[in-house]
Structures are given as C-alpha cells and as structure tokens.
Length: 449
Ligand SMILES: C[S@@+](CC[C@H](N)C(=O)[O-])C[C@H]1O[C@@H](n2cnc3c(N)ncnc32)[C@H](O)[C@@H]1O
Image 1: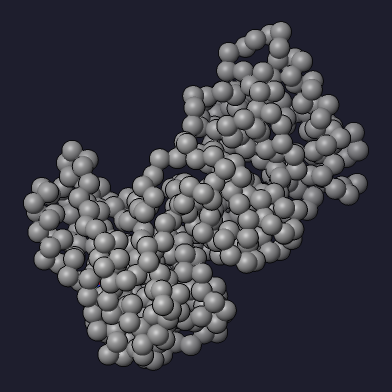
Image 2 (image 1 turned 90 degrees about the vertical axis):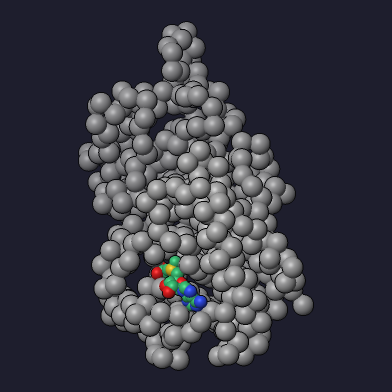
C-alpha cells in the first residue's frame, strides 16, 4: 500500500502544511500527488502498513481520516452517471460501467473473507468543491448503498448500511460521515467498512478508511482537564501541528517558553516527547502542572514532571536557565495582545504591536535562538489583527527572525505539489482565525550553523 487519501481538517492550508512538511522526512517520505479542497492524495516512497498509518493519524493535528486507495476513475464517468441535471441517455451507460468495474476491482478489496459475517458499511463522498457542484451526491450514495448491499446479500444475510436522513440526501449539502460516527458505528472494525469517494480535478478516488482522528480524546483534553482558559489556550489540534513542524529527533527535547495552561506540553507528553515548559506567570505554571498531572493519571502515562521541567521564567531570559545549544525544538504561542471585543483602528493596533508585541517577540526570539541546537526549529504563532474593513495588520516577524540569522522555512513550497493553482495562500504565512479580530499566523524558523 503506497497511495492514500487523507481527509483534511477544517483549515485545509494548515492540514496541507503539516502533512507536506512531514512527507519530507523518514519514515513518511512521499508526495502529495493530487488534492481537492477537502482531500489530499499522498504517495509514500515505501509501502506503509495500516499500523504505521494509525500511528501517523494519532500524531497529526490537521487530518480527519486516512484511507487506503483501492482504485481511481476518471471523474467524467460519475458526472455522467449522477448528473446534477438529468441526462437520461448517458446516465444508464455510465452507471452500468461503474457497476461492472466495482464488482471485480473494488469490492473484493474492501470486503475480504466476509463469509458468514454481519456487515455494516457507510459511504462518504468528498466532492471537489473548487468548482460548482458537478455530481449529485445524494443519488450517488443511494445508488451505491443499494448496489453494494444487493451484491453482498448474495452471500450474506445480514448487511446494513449507514442511512443518511432523506432530507439530507435530497439537499445539495450532504456532509460526509464525521470521524466520531466512524468510531460510533465501528466502521474501522472488520468486516465493516467506510467507503470513501474523493473527487479531485479530474479523478474520483475510491478508498477504504483505515484510521480516524479521535475527537473524544481531544475533547477530553480540551474540556475535562482541570484548568481550562479557552481565551488563552491554543487548540490541541494546532498544538499537534506545531509539534509536527519541529520534526524532533528521537528523544529530542521540546520547549514551550510561553506554556500557559500547558496544551502544547500535554500533546507532546501524549506522543512520548520530552519537554520543558516555562511561563512568566506563576498561576499558569501551576495550571500547566495540574493539567499534566491529570493527563498522567487519566491516560496512565509515565513522564517526568517536576519543578525542573515546568517552571517560572521570563522568555526574554531563557539563557539565564538553559544552556546554549541545549534544546532540540521550540513550539509556542506567545502573548497575542489584549482580548478584543470590537475591532481597533490601524493606529491602535500599531501601538499594541510597537509597545507590547514586537519587543516581546524580538527579545524572546533572540533568547530562543541562543538555547536552540543547530538545525533546530522554532514553530511560533504570531498575531495578525483585523480592521473593521477586513484589512489585516501584521508585523513582520520573519524579517526580525531573518535579521537574527534564523532561516525562514516556507510552509507550503509549491515544489512539493503536482498541481497548485486552486490553493491561494501566502507562502510564508498560514493564517488561522482565533477570534473575530485576531488571527494566528504560523511561522517556522530554523537555526543554522
Ligand atoms: C497565549 S498564552 C499561551 C497559551 C498556551 N499555549 C496554552 O495553551 O495555554 C501566552 C502566555 O504567555 C505568557 N507570557 C507573557 N509574557 C511572557 C514572558 N515575557 N515570558 C514568559 N511567558 C510570558 C502568559 O503568561 C501566557 O500564559
């Protein structure tokens, strides 16, 4: 198995940036060979086992599902078979040709050794979405459900499929099944299956889901930990993305010098990564320690947690505690400015930037650089503010980093893609909305010798 369909998260640029970064390194070397707004088609250089992809899914913050590709078709045949507007002549021929292919080429690979078994299956369709609707998803799903059920029923008595409500099947916005429901309906368990149809510019990939993001785990961490401060905490998914951008060596040491309530540290601990967390505020350090202790108990983990690895420190003076060249990677979200209930004027944003944000980022970044090992990465969030007319006010953290001799790592270099026209983004900046008026920008810097 070399080709897989990855279902991207809500912010597709963040998902592509995370996965395309990981694909540069062993053991995940590979390429994104095709994509749509919701999916990426990944080809690994080496064969991958299901178990290693389940580990990868656990590690990723921006991917909802990983699915093994069984086959691909020209998209045209589905447009003809399930048109938005009926074209009676063509659609029968196209449907027969899909049926004739499904039986020998697809279904035997999805349902293996299923004699005498009960089966539950579900179909999820991910349309292209970079153009106007092309395929009638409701019709496609109803057709496949019936066809697959009848086919399996020749050998089995007990075949069920996931029924979408009728009104949704008729509407134009039929959402695919959420990862949560894949788990609730045991669709990853043999002999059940979630069958995915993923459309890109010219193809329809048919795949079987082998791993999904576990939203219950994330929810537990986000909502049930003892200390939550939604207004300051980074979302756990984004914490994972930052950690993945570091690409730490085995047994590498991660530092979050603005650890707050400890979200990044918790996500690192869950992956068995050694960490340090520091913050200027003593209450936050206490919150991080409480949260990490809770995580230890709740997930039965064994990691070091004492005043030596989570403690009070001003990030502009990291070198007063850490030795030079001692940390392998830094993942952090510093102070993003005061909470805003309404947008400010450009001059007001500029004042916050000049007086609070820029000096803090400048001094901390310099201090981070000193204690970072050569070739170590800094994945750091910076704020971008929105004016009332949607114009963005940014400060140039990349320039500050460059002037310090840090290398700016492009998060989505075009060379890593086969096609790229549809995706609009700023190469150096991946933006995520934090609230109405503050956006998060992901920056990645490398310390070079
Ligand atoms: C946006 S919060 C970090 C949130 C954290 N990622 C979490 O999930 O809870 C920023 C943190 O930076 C800390 N901070 C602000 N100035 C600092 C400084 N000079 N040195 C260290 N920490 C600082 C604040 O106390 C706050 O906890």
